[in-house]
Length: 195
Image 1 (cartoon, rainbow, N blue to C red):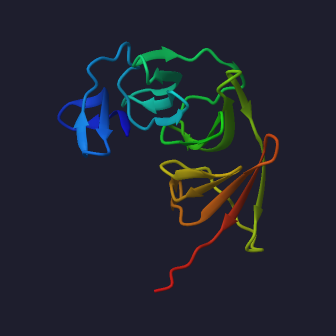
Image 2: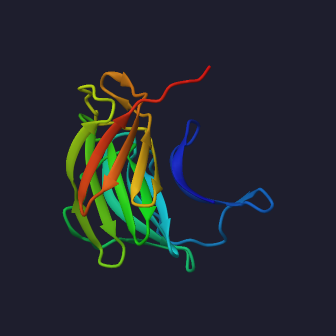
């Protein structure tokens, strides 16, 4: 497991890189890594192949819209040269990998809780903004809010988004995001406790 950046109250924003050996449950700093991004928190990181992709974040004053890779073989950071319609600067968004692509959803830009969806093709370095269609499987007229601080995982070509916050408080539904050739179908499902 690899952890980059974060925040420590007695230090501030970090750009350290920590690695956890899951066999021995041993944390360590790599012997060498070069040119890390600026210190930040609220960013997202996804590993695809031999690279870790890091987008966005916040340093206490500024939201970042920068995009980096860490080559896990050489431990060298590089800013990603990319094309297409890239996401705007944000923090507390979610990213997940599917094949050679990463998908980014939501976040907060300091003013608005975002509900946009982007994909990045790691082979062509091309960002694509998805068209969004919203529905509710419950049959109720339910708003799917923009959100930040949520979790997202991939399940084949689908993504499950859980929780988060928005201007009206915390969110308790589960949102399914389905990839239909660059069209995101956001579908809200409610979950219930059996207790």
